[in-house]
Image 1 (cartoon, rainbow, N blue to C red):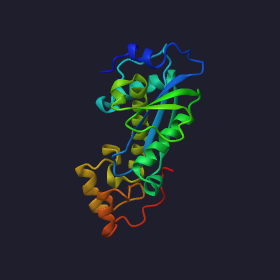
Image 2: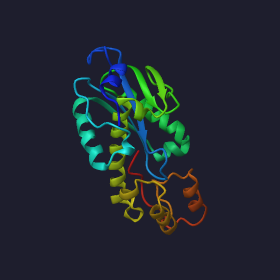
Image 3: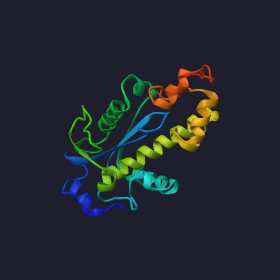
Image 4: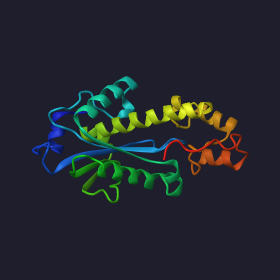
Length: 220
């Protein structure tokens, strides 16, 4: 579990909530799935309102994530950006992720003086100084908060995708390469939400796409 106030002091204090020099945490959700966008979130926590129970979003259950999401959205400065399947295909997943991270940081309602970014890369064009933090969602309360926001936001997008394309079960696996998803890919072919540069999807596209034209993308 996250170590709370000592770590927040290392990130935010002695800064004032409304003053320049605030620290943002930045994280993503959805680098690994075979379908759907990659979503990034940037969060500046208010030291007066730090949600309890923060952790890497993957280590929390759905109810815990949604409770934390509501608290974070109520008391923090938050921005979210998504890189579409088209952008992932036109560049690659790493570049698309870094682009979304930079966009999320740029969209914050308060300008951060510094950003802590989960992973090994500082996104180009961040707009402030940045620091890559390996396993940052376990080491930084701000990154952990961004992890929760990105995950809950992307999950909601994939639930919507499941309504548009019920044959794939997106609302259950969120686009990840589960057995159920791979079976659906083989049975129905790929739809416009599938990442055509990812090997399992590319293998399906090499044969006949049983889905034919599945309509326009629902995420841009």
